[in-house]
Figure 1: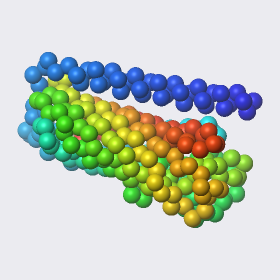
Figure 2: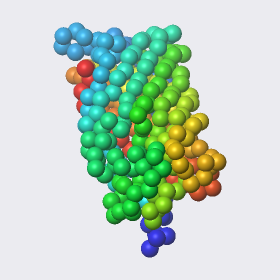
Figure 3: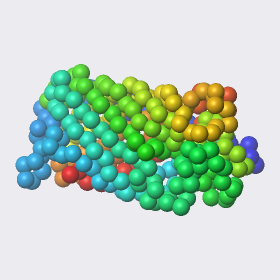
Length: 274
């Protein structure tokens, strides 16, 4: 029974990765087609506000699903907010910021709050039947931020490269014992984003960043010398002049040690641009 459950989680995990990779490739191919004459400045609401360059916030509801090879999966709904700043044209800069934990503490307050706290303090709470108490996968107190520089800047196409940074809380607990990797990680790495305007009423963002953990701030871990994990994020947002948007983000924990753990976090978002 245990083997079949592990096989199911591994199959689901690899299926989600394949879907996200194919989505990412398809959107990049679409972004490479610059035949349309639309531009980022064409995307305006009824009041003439340029949504791409003059908006700053996204408020949304999200469906969050956490998967792990070692623990049962769980899911739920959460509200949250993100901040962004866009400049069009080659040489412009772009910034994104979000803290998933702000929403997580609302939708699973009693369920997930104890996990980050015990990871940082090194204390182990009694083993329970609630999956979310035995698996944490999200940001920490700092959240996730990306800064980009527009390497390619056309009227309807931007390709930007930059850096990503922030903190992660990851913990996997089996039979009441934390498994490595487990801790509070500071991480940073490269980031890429492509944006495309297929019509004057919308634009599409496709992004990816690869964060390498360089510090585990947990006071206690099973093995302080255990290799720190990496985190891969792939996502896309569909944004409209009506100020509605739809987004998908998939974050994967990549175990660099001998535990051979595997885990992912999927966020599906629907909200408004302000």
